[in-house]
Image (cartoon, rainbow, N blue to C red; front, side, top):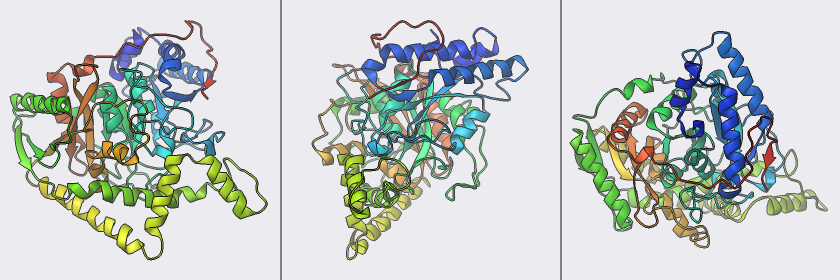
Amino acid sequence: MLDQLTVTGLSSLLARGETSSREITQTFLQRIEQIEPLIHAFISWDAADALRQADHADKLRATGASQADKPLLGIPIALKDIIAVRGHPLTCGSRILANFVSPYDSTVAEKLKTAGAVLFGRLNLDEFAMGSSTENSAFGPTRNPWALDRVPGGSSGGAAAAVAAGECPAALGSDTGGSIRQPAAFCGVVGLKPTYGRVSRYGLVAYASSLDQIGPITATVTDAALLLEVISGYDPRDSTSVQEPVPRYLDALREDVKGIRIGLPREYMTGILHPEVRKAIVNAMTVLEQLGAHLVEVSLPHTEYAIATYYLIAPAEASSNLARYDGVRYGLRVDGPDPVAMYSATRGAGFGPEVKRRIMLGTYALSSGYYEAYYLRAQKVRTLIRQDFLRAFELVDAMLTPVSPTPPFMLGEKSGNPLDMYLSDIFTLSCNLAGICGISVPCGFTTAPRLPIGIQFLGRPFGEETILRIAYAYEQATSWHKERPIVPCVGPDISQPGIPGTKLA
């Protein structure tokens, strides 16, 4: 079935003339209608617009355009609802932007359109990307396709769930502290967080500006390499974008891993690891050794400070970035007797509990008398964490770690305990603090219930080629990436074009 094929698989069919972009897009729209009542991966989608784009792609192909010119020609791609697409909703999973429509395209949206992609659907997320379970969305939680009583991870849980459930062949998410890699691991798909500055952040609604990065969520490493190549590159509209040449990432997949040195940070194989996660990671180490990789123990001594450092820096930046939502220029407005009352009422009604918590944490850390004790000190520790990684990369080519200390947890299990929820990101957020790249790939399942487990490969700054090479070699030596969840169809069987767009409440 078309909805079970990868981006490269669909591209091959299109190139051979065995299907059309309209047929592919229609198939995914039908899949969404059938299973969205159970999964809720999307906040909204516009079927008519998607089919118009698909028809345009088919016309381009008929006039001679090809995958060589436009590598994503006719392929449907969905975006996390924090990445701007002109004329489409941009809610960030928040009531404060519930009716906002983006007036412009993000750079990554422009690049996808230039590559011929069909952009459809706004994917669910934790409000303003603040969360690890996609339970903080103002539009309701997303469910894990492997077990509907489990979370899909967060904050890009909608993107990971949609790819895993066959609602789209690929998606773009954002990663501030693990928000691409952790949901990818929880949903049994591939998630890549590029080096900070590799992909433009223009048009990505800011959570923590020094940490945010856009990246792909796909079914395979090959698809991740393809999408990364499309969206990467210098952008003068983003002051943090780096003028670094974009490699041919697909070419990196041709090399094996014989002789490559992979570091095993001793601080990551701790007692908090779930036994079945530990077992899957150890089994993956064995596979890589059999492929010829050399595993070397390394140390990242400041790892224990990463959680505290992250939850000072990220909320501080969030408190500044979210000050723009004031009810004056756009978004929700709750009137009051004076501007201060209106501002307070708007933010009180518009923001959810987790966003308010992080705004208050960040404002406190930046306040007079506490800036040096908290924020400034956290920035100094961040530098030490980055130096740990750079020293380790003098000894190894990449590192291997768990993605999450546990398998996907139950909906509601950690929502009442913020600290327990924050610890879900303990193995991912150092990557963002250090500004390096990381990729999560499937590496096994728990026994009962059967839930996905992911493994993470971390690379030096702009070392995406290396981690893609390792991830691909491991993927091809195992079969975990071939498994898909079985999700019952509960929606209508729609086989005709023109499915009405739907906004979920």
